[in-house]
Length: 256
Image (cartoon, rainbow, N blue to C red):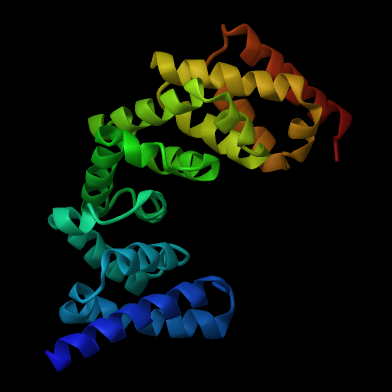
């Protein structure tokens, strides 16, 4: 029992440390320490299984700051396996943790176990209105962005449709999205251009871009390009054309 308690304490502390190091993910010393902890997690099944749901979500979020590092991917895959295989663990995650875990898993979209875990979490978003309705605007945008990495998966499409429904039905939520989140949401929704609820949200967000000069000005060049590419999926929608014209005006006025 003492050994189990020690393992659990060590596991939660590793999660906390990784989360802290990820705040300075480009610092060489933080990278080195994080990679060492990731290696420990990847190699120690008991340590991974001592993590509670919150620690799993936070650790995945931290590891996703180094998606191209093999040992971080290995540790993330092992934790994704827990989410895929343990409904009890998955169902303990709150809305913010589900959004964070999805966002992390989307950094490895071609890894089968990450896709499996993401699909399972998408199922919760699709099936649990109470969970969906707890997400704030930023979390909705991030969840849409994550789910868009698996556009051909039915459960991800179902979750996206349900989240898009919130943006249609809740103008306050929609209007809380900042410029980057608007571009992120447009990019995600553009993966389902033939889905009516996605098109409806896009029209509403395009209306914001057309009508709010400050919102357009807050977009960085990448955000402008992202929004333009997304809006091009609805060339016959008047408000999308209007938003494209307004964004093109920025490009014309700010050549540098």
